[in-house]
Image (tube, rainbow, N blue to C red):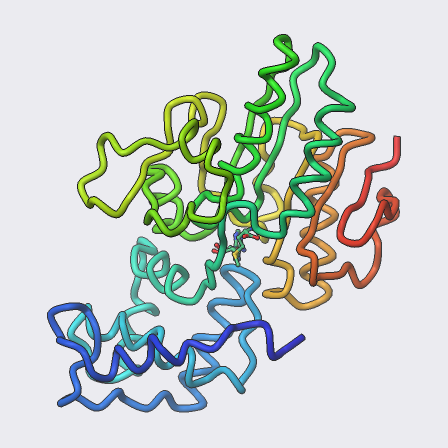
Length: 301
Ligand SMILES: C[S@@+](CC[C@H](N)C(=O)[O-])C[C@H]1O[C@@H](n2cnc3c(N)ncnc32)[C@H](O)[C@@H]1O
């Protein structure tokens, strides 16, 4: 489990150590400063307090490399200077960028496609005349929420009265900006059905030739907003039929994960469904949930 928490960043580290300084990476002539255990403790406590993200000491070099980028951008030479800057960061501007640096954002369209087959069946079963609400609760750059939207749009073709709203949230402000822009490298859609590629993506408004943009149809009923899962008081003013909380629980310790799940369950309508990542598990199942099948739970009615 620990091993999977932060995937290896080896390639990025190599690039940071060798590429051009103007590209925002460490130049080969400069040595990446060493992160002392005391500074590591400070940064790991800060990210834990801010985002619930639990970074063990074994991941010190990963933190060193990720925060090294901030040092470079700020023209600092020591992690202790960065620590001082964060301590004096009264408005919290750098804290946002610090948090962005330490999140892991891997995602893709139709990731863990089993869930989307299940979602299709669920939507078909429940798509009567009422509106279905869906939440991608750690949406990263938006692929998960847009995939949900594609599934809903497909159903809307055969059930004209079917209506839906989708919310995508994340703590990482940069990923949210990407989600809102909805511009992706063309390779990102290579594995999705070609009918979907043509129907839901467009080349218009894209500057790079090798990019595509999410079309209007998918944006109409979908929005993104900033939301921190560990700010338990920050409730979304809407209850949901379906919540995806996938591939984010591994960041948290068991207690935090349990509190997050309890909070999300409180935002789920009775009979609603919670999806977690296929390789994740709930250490203790919330008393309001029943197990449906691996990684899928339903709120008791
Ligand atoms: C690995 S991505 C998962 C994306 C998507 N759910 C998927 O399965 O493809 C995990 C996301 O969780 C977000 N995250 C981490 N801690 C968070 C927190 N406390 N509140 C909200 N989002 C958080 C990260 O910024 C990151 O974008």
